[in-house]
Image 1 (tube, helix red, strand yellow):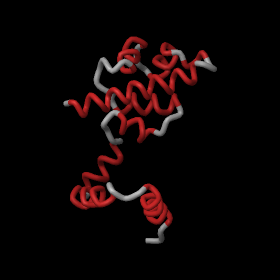
Image 2 (cartoon, one colour):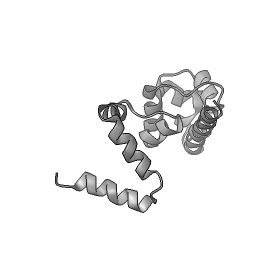
Image 3 (tube, one colour):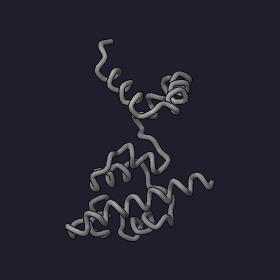
Image 4 (tube, rainbow, N blue to C red):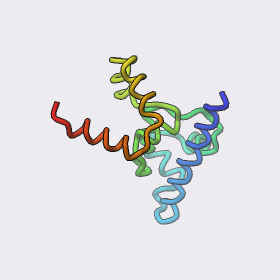
Length: 124
């Protein structure tokens, strides 16, 4: 349970930081305006930012990410979640993806980036 609380804390701080940074220059990024555009109440978004509630669902997190200029996968990861499309891919071959992820966890970022590029650009 502590691990989950830590993820929620980072998520709330992250959302608030992104929103306040934009709000300094644009009133459209007030808590109220962002909440309305994301389909939640200002009170609820405030509670998310203060870590008083569990992370929102995928749809709301994606809306927040898009609204605040954040990568969707990063926002979901901070909430301890993965996107439904990635979940479907993993569930299609769970053992292979588990082995792959465990093998990749200790690799340096530059090695991971090289693998991603090779897979993305490869001729299969």
